[in-house]
Image 1 (cartoon, one colour):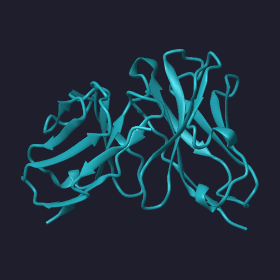
Image 2: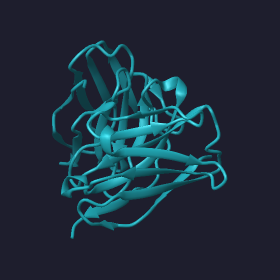
Image 3: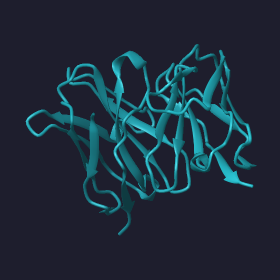
Image 4: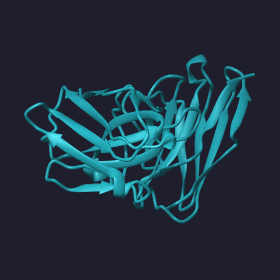
Length: 122
Length: 107
């Protein structure tokens, strides 16, 4: 079955850009049946949906983050990516990649990667 | 955004107990409601989707119910591996949103 693994810097300086990659195994990012999705969770807090990317090129981003978020898919490497610009301490969180079937409207997220902690600090 | 409110925020229970967690949406979400289980240091795991449907591999002691704005997750007989935090999530409207979580603790 599909497995996901996030990777990227664990420390980002304020005002810089956070860049993460999610590598897909056991499946293809070219699959039109799924949205490739990013979510995050600050320590001790709840879950926030960041955005999703469909292989057709369609994207949707959380309005709260839309001006700073970009996602992409690299079919040659079978991975998808997240860029979040102008980060502040409020962006410190565990970042998860996940997939959701297109038939699930705006959900359901399964599977998830294990998550990667990104700390924003100088 | 649709606000999802869970209650209680935490519950203490013993192995074998029946546990019920409720989730209320700030507006109707039809049947676009899912439940996740998260253990410390781990990613959330989808338990139930579309109110009632059990994700593959999830034990049948987990069940979901509800409609419109009010939903329930029930664990019929709590097992040691069920101590975790549970989140509801609406998939009806953009952006998808989660409840604040309910922590099920050992009594």
